[in-house]
Every structure is written in C-alpha cells, then in structure tokens.
Amino acid sequence: MRNTRVIVSRIGGPEVLQVVEDEAPEPGAGQVRVAVAAAGVSHADVTIREGMYPVPARPPFTIGYDCVGVVEKLGPGADGRWKVGDRVAAITVRGSYARYLVWPADDLTAVPEGLDDAEAVSLVLNYVTAYQMMHRVAKLRAGERALIHSAAGGVGSALVQLGKAAGLETFGTASTSKQELVREMGATPIDYTREEFGARVREMTGGEGVDAVFDAIGGDSFTRSFGALRRGGRFVGYGYTAKVGKGQWGRIDTFARLGWMMLQPGRTARFYGIMFAKAKHPEWFGADLGALFGMLASGAIRPIVAAVLPLTEAAEAHRMLERREVRGKIVLRPDVAVAGQG
Image (cartoon, rainbow, N blue to C red; front, side, top):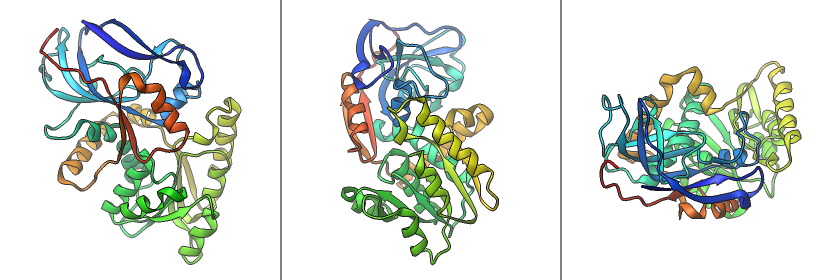
C-alpha cells in the first residue's frame, strides 16, 4: 500500500515542501493506522517549517499539526478501544500532511458521525486553542470584554464565535476587506490598517479597556495589546506571526516583551501553547474537543473553512497563509477511500 505525504526538505519558505511517495507505515504495539480524511493548515505549521517552533525538528520530516480520519488498521493491543472504520481526530504537531498516519491509540479522540471532515478538523487545533485560552486560561465570564487579534483567521474566528456563545462583548482586529465577516460573527470590528487598535478599544469602552486580549502577532503588538487591558485584565499570547521569516531574534524580541509584561503589577500576561497545556493537563484535550464537537453538532459554532485543497497543494496553502488572504481555516484532503484493513 502506497502512502503520499508532504515533507519539509529543509528549513525555509513554502518551496521547501515536497510531495513524496513511499510505503504506508505499519502500526506497532498500541498504535493504529489512520486514513487521513482532512489535515488542517495553520500558522503553527509555518512556524515549524521556518524552524521557529519551540521544539524544532531536523529535516526531512512530515509536516502537519492536526487531522481527522478513519481507523484503517489496528496494531497489536490497540483493539480495546477502536475498531476499523471509527472516525478519529489527532493533534500530531508533525505528521498529518499524509494519506496514512500511524498514531498511538490512546491519543486519539472520537469524531461523531455526521460532522463534515473539514469543519471537524477546524476544531482540533484552532477551536481547542481558543476554548482553552478563553475558559481555562483567561477564565472569562459572560458580560466581560475581549480584544481578539486576527479575528477573521483560524483561531481568531474561533475566539469570536466562542465569545458570542459565552456571552462576551468582543472586539476583533482585521483588515478592511474582512470587517464585515468579523461583524457577522458577532464582534465589533477594528480596522488595524486605518486606526490604532488600543486607542479605539479605550474609546469604545469609555476609557476602561478590556478584560482580556488574545494576540498571536507578537513583537510590538504584544506591548500595545497589554496597554489595552483594564486593571485586573488578562493578556494571552499564543504566537508570533509577525516575526516568522525574521529569524530567532524575532522570537526573542517577542518573549522579551512578554517577560516585561509579566513583571507589571495590576494585570497578568501568559503565553499559551496547546502542546504544553496538553502535557500538563492531558485530560483537558479530549474533554474540550468533545465539548466542541457537541457545539458543532448543535449549530452553536460554525467553523469558517477558507479553502479545501488537495494534499499535493500544501505549498500553495502555506503561500496563502503568508499572503494573509485567508478567512478561517485551510484544509488539505488526501481523499482516501478506506477499504478495510490493509
């Protein structure tokens, strides 16, 4: 059985992504082979490809942070929970841009029947990240206010939708062309290309500021976002997209600013990483993803799928992200037809 996968051949731009074919991996003890139905494309993938991820990998390696698929083959000892044909989701960090993926059976989450693959995979990284930052880190309550950067993007749109479901008042930064989408989702849009978001937030809140800010831009945006908080407010950083392509000094600058913010009295600042949260609180991930699948099934949330591309178009998907033309989530589909155990 042949496998198609996308590898990072060397650290660099989208051009370093290569499509290769080899034999499908065989599941070992306690593992299953998953036929990938949909793989998410995220800024985390870009960070990994650029060598900017906190735990770097040495090329060549298969890229891909998250996926939804179907159990296709069971390894020894993996038949206690799963059976061939079960729908599952995994957060892999690396490895999801593939037709077939081998993964530990106890690190998969069940995907309910009836959910669209592209919408379901949008929850695995983006919505879990948003849900945990909002409810487990910032611990926002109905009636509080939040500033959400990149509000039309994958995690940003998830934060806006979850904020609406939680009864928050939200403000979302986005470029001019994405203002209407942000408004339709339930947030007050702020055009960062035309106005200073901190001043605009203070104006709209009567000078008080917001209870929380969610920022994946990094650099100077961190500092300015911190200034938009009211006393007792919570800053949550979760990326540094503005620094991708600028080398390690860009990341160092971002975390230096975060360190300064953490020392300031009256407000709090934290950096969130989903894999660090998953390692510290392994019980959170399955519970939160399960809750989100329930919200999707009920219509309480509706992920925005920006584009569905063939797996072989991974490099173009990364270019789209870097051109900042994406609204929501890009999804790659190998379009595998599962015929039972291989």
